[in-house]
Image (cartoon, rainbow, N blue to C red; front, side, top):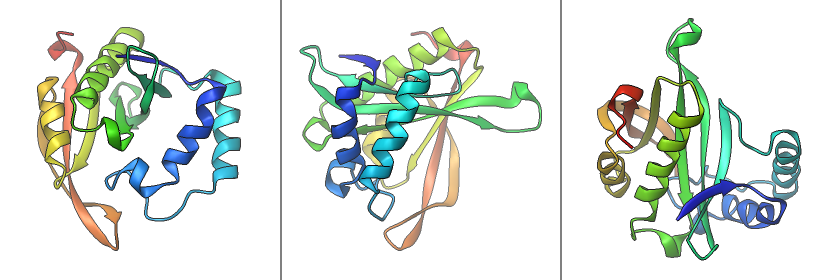
Length: 176
């Protein structure tokens, strides 16, 4: 398995995945359809501007060893205070349904954390997941992330608010 930059040929399936509640998965579905044309324009513009990979924001394709794309990982900047040194990276993952439950998510997230620590200056990497997503919680713990606590009613999904669990790992804790 590897992570690779998004290419023009990926935009179609990435947009289709984002716009389909079955493909994107219940924990990544925003609750309403994504405008495919608008999402395609947005992704094309990002790809043209920075290849969709920057220090503080990015997206990469998760791909099997045979070159089959199975999902994506992305990251963005978060800040816990006014100081620039309070900035950290937060990430997410989406895998196509037929590739879930096989350990691919764990490995992809391990590769992403290694990538972010090796290619950015971040001190802290964090992510969160719904409390009703124990598979993702296990995956995060397997790669060494620490469960920090529950963020109450953080996400509005399917007509109600859901609690999330916050996880993090510090540069000093990462062993690769």
